[in-house]
Length: 492
Image 1 (cartoon, rainbow, N blue to C red):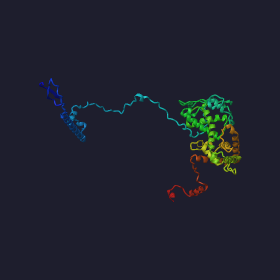
Image 2 (cartoon, one colour; image 1 turned 45 degrees about the horizontal axis):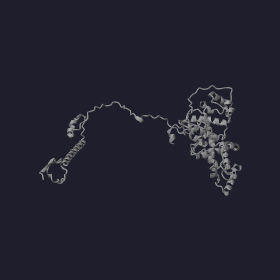
Image 3 (cartoon, helix red, strand yellow; image 1 turned 90 degrees about the horizontal axis):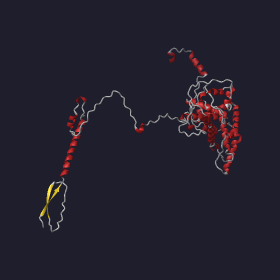
Image 4 (spheres, rainbow, N blue to C red; image 1 turned 135 degrees about the vertical axis):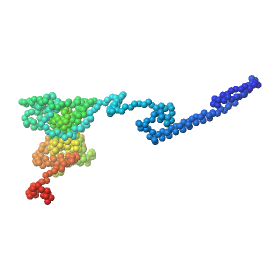
């Protein structure tokens, strides 16, 4: 067994040397080493804790100083300003915190400010668009007052009638010149451009700029069948306004107008629309075609409104059983006999053109509300024209024929198919009016008053004169003995 050997072991935390004796033997295997349990020293932890508590106390003291300064309104006036170094010395701020350099501020004498500017994608300026105009913006405008001017400068290719190109203003004036009887004729020739006169008026100078209607950007235009929505907003609103007046002319003047009337009414409606809206646009062939199609539209609209009244008012029944069919056939025969369908009392044939269904039809087609055609174009519908009644009779008769077999068979309404019956009813109504014009006019005016009231138009109370002949005589006697110059007379 050899001599024991000392081994030095250094503890890093305690920084102490520990001597351990180890016996070594060359003959015997070394004894197993015993593991020493090393525990961490609490010295560093206690130092860290003391430092933290000291800093925390210092922070609390600083916070108290700040609170006191706030309560005392520490910041002095400009006349008694302390140096920043003194402030930091009093408050005990750390020396590592340094005050910022003093910045000179100049007082601005003007209120000008640099405008903010957008940058990047936000800098792209959007185009300023004009305010949008509703398609119905001009539709309910009242018709303009009649003027001596015929607005020749609004004429375009669509105003001259078939078979003619765009005439000059002077040529258009020549077309309208002629005898007084020609001017009063309700059915001008089909081609007004072919009419010649002995004198021609010189072309007047244009007083205002007349724009040409333009299509809407991005519109899918079909040249063979243009629509109002194909045009820009102002033109679209003008087209709808002119279309409403054109339909009213068809409804009140001639339900089946010829070609010449159609061209005449398109020009008249367009002119009035421009005057009412204070706009100035030429009428083109496309716009004229749009307006002329409105004649068939109003007849189709009337048909759609009258068909349900066969059941709701007359009492036709839907069904195919024998009993229902027999009922409908008897009712059809009763209403068709001597056109009893429009009488107030179909049994006694009394109340010509005063049946309940007449008022129902007027309300459904032309007097639905205060924006309807019958209210807007009062000048055309008051009193209810005989032509309007003729159109109602014609479509009523057509709808009754759909029930002739006892069940409703829907038929297509063509102008050529109803032209004969329309002429018959026009003549019947003219003869009815000739029996007593005053009474018939009163009946038609009453129909308008009732229809406009149902549309929501408030009736206006008419103030009548109150000073009758008797009241005048009595007032004359009272004034005979007075001079009216003294106050005492008033007191008496």
